[in-house]
Length: 245
Image (tube, rainbow, N blue to C red; front, top):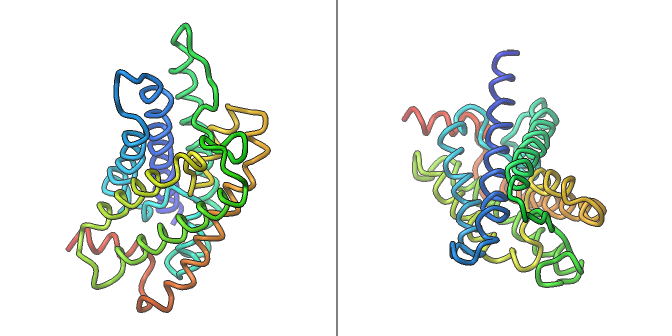
């Protein structure tokens, strides 16, 4: 049992590390240079690709959450066991912080590098488009809601076997295409926490929104999913069945 939990936690740590390092890294290291041409679109695809790749690499071990909102949303949907919730969230946040630290060390190796927002999330003056707190809260809540709905739907019985990682990764890409100008896109409290700790100042003070809004949207979606989809095993079991089918 301890070995199984250790494997699960390692998978969640690595998956979250890759999401933050790859997604935020594309913003900090690549998007800062116009000549590379990746822009918002490239960053959006980078985040989607991190989830897509790790869903297939370690999703069959832990369910591939990589996000406290996903963990709580799946718990709300009856797809995540009670004993996994807190340990998953702890290692997800740890993975984000370690990834942010690694990214900081790499980025600061450039002589004229300026940290700036360090890919952190914000509202008001810290929003890329200076959107008000209400707009930022609503977009994070709605996008997290639909993200969970997509995750539950694509991992339910009757969905195409073995392909869940593709729509989930594309959903995260779409989420970023919509909300990068608004909040710099969170829908993931762990992803928000690591960069904010290194950006410091008001970014840390605004973290409350990027925990509350995604988690609220995720839990609402999970509760709704109970009525949309027939009762099923945990996502971990479903993903394992898809992999071995």
